[in-house]
Image (cartoon, rainbow, N blue to C red; front, side, top):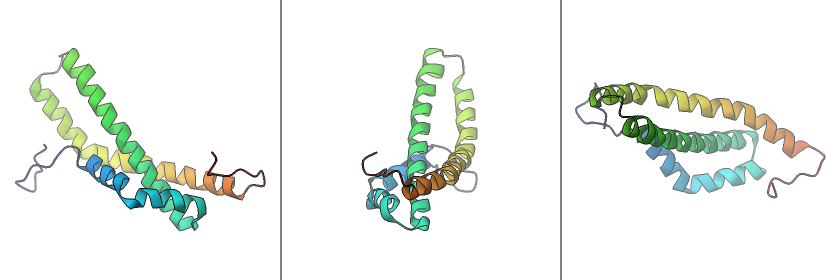
Length: 128
């Protein structure tokens, strides 16, 4: 939990991870796959962003678990106060970083998907 400076209620560190999990288990994630297959460019863009956002949040959660287990628990080099300080900084930075990564992946991924779908090679996205 992180104490947000503008409120008295602590916020879970993994709040954005929880949002990604809700998006993953919602019907929207399955719609995203359908929209990539046969949607307009706007729906393809939304779909690619949703799926890359979910993926990058899963990667962040795994990286956080590895950091805690390997760097801090086994090495024990950082005192408890230092751990809290680091996580408080990361709490404010990771949403910006993860959303930026999802946006960059969308900017790169949508033209690639559009090219694959429009090629004459007969590639079917359902088979790949």
